[in-house]
Image (cartoon, rainbow, N blue to C red; front, side, top):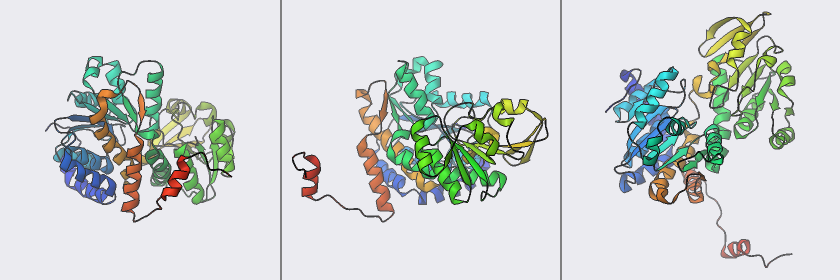
Length: 417
């Protein structure tokens, strides 16, 4: 089985971590048991570009149990966990991923899993889909359909659809409630703070923490930071989330003002140049910068380098940029997504929901791809509801059921005051 990982000897350690994750992911484990019986992917190849974590490993094993041949590469240079890569290689997954990969090798890995001639694609950030559309157009006709995991990737794909450039049907996993209401909110909130603390060991109580972007990810980060005693400031470009942030009790202001006040800055917008040279020029000595967006474009590191007279690594995943006036600014994980560069990513229990969506959407696409157009689709409602019900059951939570009279009332318009 072809693979390329940093050190296959790490497999035993990786398998232990995967086993722990499986205990925290009962929904995906129940889906795996279904797949073992029904074999929905028998004879199919699924190629995935994802963060290589123990949770991703549980998803890959579930798809393999359903009969699929799997190709996997990492979706970010610093998010791959090398022991997990090694364990998956020993599990018979065609994996090409290692931490600290350079850009040329990153796309070599992308090409390796596309060379497997997949019918189904799972993407996180839309790099696989982008390469297919730019460099491997002839292969597009061989692909049945795709999935996209994250906000940034969905934005890219909807822009392609709008421009008439999307040549494949894509399911937007990120946009379904059991993904963004839990993964983005609870997962990003906790794992981002985890990455911040591992990289810096800073005390949040009493600090001013600036969150750039108040989508589901930003809301989760702001809530956790507030809970640890930070004074939270939110920056936004959209009036609606800005209004919600203000009503949630946070100060809202432009980044040009927040740059002077913040002790810690976390970007999570999905856009570029959120923090730039004009902000570095007025930041406090000791300001800490981190990004939890998918790509390392939110904090302009090139401009930070240009304004610095000395750069050095001071802790694992933390670099010090000494400015020409002597102030020091600290950057976590090269400006890459800090919850995976400096920590382990989302807890397994919340990824149980997102990857259950992925697994069931793969099954749905395998059955329904022939009827789909070249556009971005939502996850079918029945999948979302099934995942929520399975998660509640795994937690021992029961809910009410509508009576026939209640169901009739909700479906009618005749009854009123």
